[in-house]
Length: 156
Image 1 (cartoon, rainbow, N blue to C red):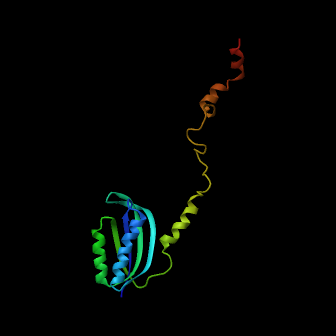
Image 2: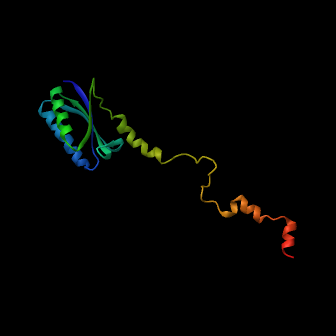
Image 3: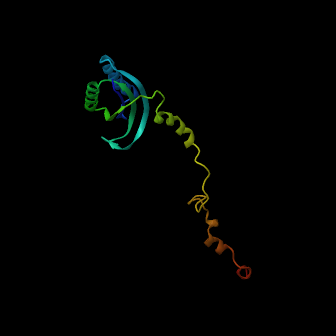
């Protein structure tokens, strides 16, 4: 039987258990037809590149399928009818890799890298824009630093 990889995106307002129920239904249909699911990955709730049906986030799931093309067409038809599924993409592949996908393996690494952003760049607003006191501004320093001869005349 041919091998396929399918990625589906489900709405963000359903729970992960509901997404698993959708996937379990797909798996049950394939296994009753004599096919099998070689790979199943839940990528999590991720931000979409653009809004799809008023959703900004979606649950991503990757499936590696070994099934007949007729059965795959029926599954795609049923998923397109399901209002919880936003998008679906199926590709025919030569083999299904058992290692975790790059998206799943990268997911854990990102969290550690984002905590350190590097040193602050030196620049014009190094101390922040609104944090300067009135004493730091040049115009106030110029008023406070009177020449010595003017300061003596003020007291007389």
